[in-house]
Image (cartoon, rainbow, N blue to C red; front, side, top):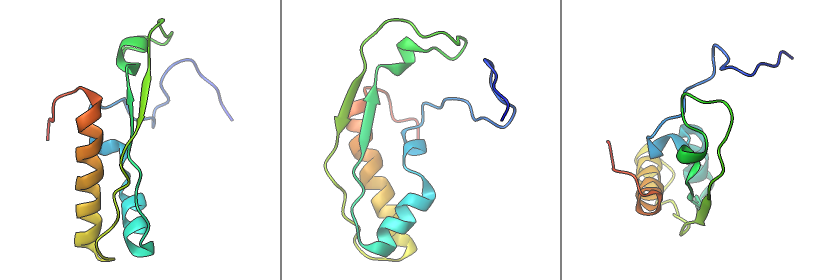
Length: 100
């Protein structure tokens, strides 16, 4: 295993898209299994670790556990509705604009 202080070549950049938090496979599995997704919002990390820095600054981070979003079926459309519900809950708490 190789360690580096810089960004690995296949490592994704940090994104401001809240949808990135809700992974495709997670919502599909949750819809198929009939279990809710619990959205978690982490706010304040952008000011602590900015994209052009590798050393964090002091700051406050808030973690909000959202309302569980139960699936309404087991098909692809149910997974999309689950994604949208979790995304809306995350956006409600993140303090960032909806760029979608």
